[in-house]
Length: 335
Image (cartoon, rainbow, N blue to C red; front, side, top):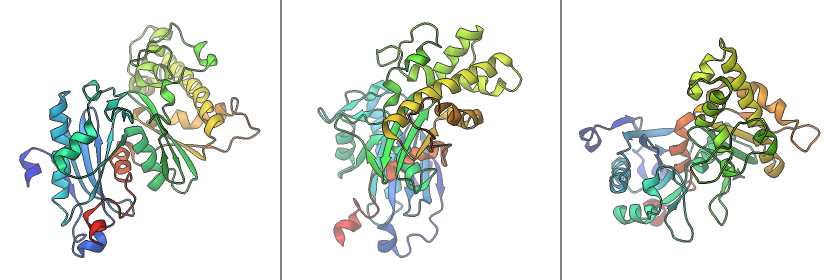
């Protein structure tokens, strides 16, 4: 297989799935998650089962290498099917509807590049491309922690802080392609009083929510309070035995509650699903909902705060869901 020659990691559970090809392949979709360290591609069936997975390292920051790697993963997955499947791709940042080039990417080599058009040129057919936080929210709304909910807000807490909004299992993007980007709202005044110096965000602004709720934001809070330099996960792991780490984690929960309450006051979602590395901290789910109630404009908050069902696998799963089942494949055009 081509993938094995390139040193790719590949999992196959297709078995007999392609025996009766047309009826079953109509219900399959390809999803690609472009991450900072890895590119993951899957074939997803209509029930949310992953039939095939390929994962390769992201080849540095050189745009052409990233482009070639994405299309190579797509081509390898397409080779497993008898006819072409629809393709959705989740990326950092988003596509500008004005210039049709990438913007707001923390992988800066993508900014200003016509990534969607270049992928379509290499592949020779249409693909759909969305922000990775939107793909996370879509995955959890379709098959995960938000399944069955009318409205879902997916909040990413990791290297950055992002979000996505899904209403009736449909992604809300907006005319500027920034719906859900709560991480670049300014922190509430009540949070601003709890942090030390002003914090500059990579976007060029000061005191964005991301500067407080990202992993580096938690680390900075701990450094300002204790003079210790620890990563966010080191803080979380030390909290059980170290008083200063526990205090930082409690302050982080207070920050998160106040920032998420602005989301509830604006969107009033049925469920908020947390994603990213910090979503694995149990204390968030134990304390944040009750604290949010102090800031939400209602007598009793019923919005659920939930951990993710799929972890870092949600990106590729949500990318596949950018196409409704049965759309965008050769089989649709053949029927």
